[in-house]
Image (cartoon, rainbow, N blue to C red; front, side, top):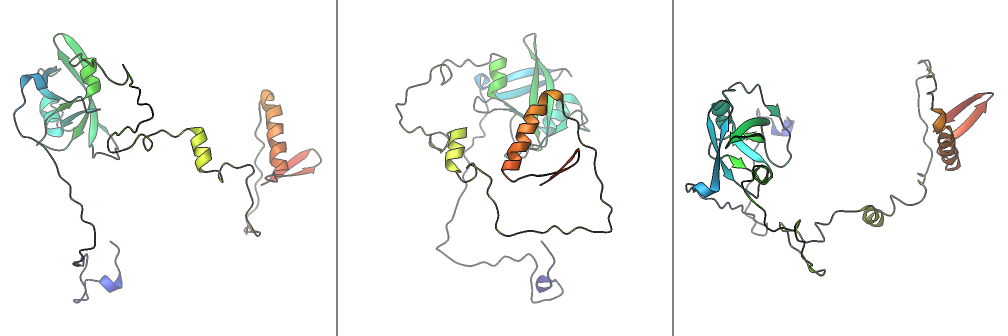
Length: 246
């Protein structure tokens, strides 16, 4: 928060970082609920993999997860990398991941390189996502939309709270139809005139022209002529020199 005189702590009648509490029953109230269980996993819900350090790590198989997740405490105990020198930082806008690492794990004489996201926390299980579970042949997808896409006959398809229309990927024609003013012919022109003020005491500098490949001369000339017709460039010829102003 910024420091304002009206909220300065020196004024005893003003409170800094204060929140006014009002009783307005007309405001909407939102609640967040979480459904979880603390039961012990059965053997058919988890898989134990051996690390290169000789220790073992037990993952919960989660076919709904798109990545593998372990805690930083589990990673340190598994690899002995207590200073986190072998991890890479990661920036995620959806989940607060701290870092990521690639672990060398094995099971039944088969070795795998498992990419994991590391989270700073203790009270959660290590998660093995669907891509890794399929690679290790721990699960088998007998039927899905990739194997057999049902014919919905134009009916509404709900997915993660979104309708099929809102979950539709925009195409080039969709964008041009939704924003016709942006993609219309011409570039338009703002009303009025604008004068650029420069410092006359600063000596001007002329940069050397950039050399263009011979194969692109015709395309470059056609583009410059088009910009000239659109009044985006003004060509001023002074002998053999061509000066362009935009």
